[in-house]
Image (cartoon, rainbow, N blue to C red; front, top):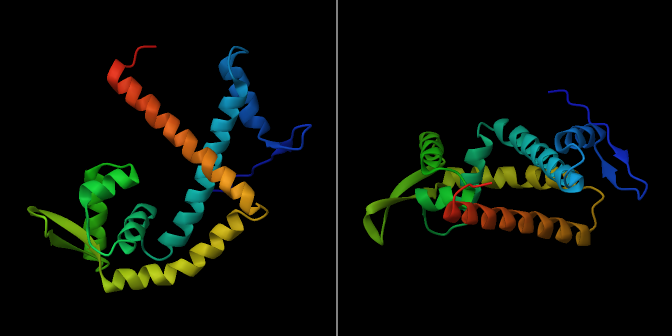
Length: 185
């Protein structure tokens, strides 16, 4: 993918994407919150940039970005994690995580073990080979994320994190509201 981003600056010096601004302005037709839609487009652009970087780093090592998420979560646990919990933590379906665990298990990076608290359940846990994989991936990943956030101050990173998580919390509240009250407009 050879995507060229041409950003411009508003009079206050902040970046914007002129293509996104034009598309969003046309979409709302002058009747809506252009700034919120532009911010949403910017979040999506940033998300895709991070995902492209993660995919580049993990797939070159034979692991998909989704499998990488599972490995990272398992490497941070001193006991196994259920498929359901991995799915909830990753915001994906249990079926999706089952497929990822199947692949990681086949590659010797993860194994399934009985759940000591519930004999009917199994947990996924990282193997020594999986931990070695994560250890080898750690430094390149840190370097890549440092490069992605080049020029950000520590204070800006804290604000950025806060804003992203507040937006995710707002989305969760909205989803809960819609689930309880239907999807009426």
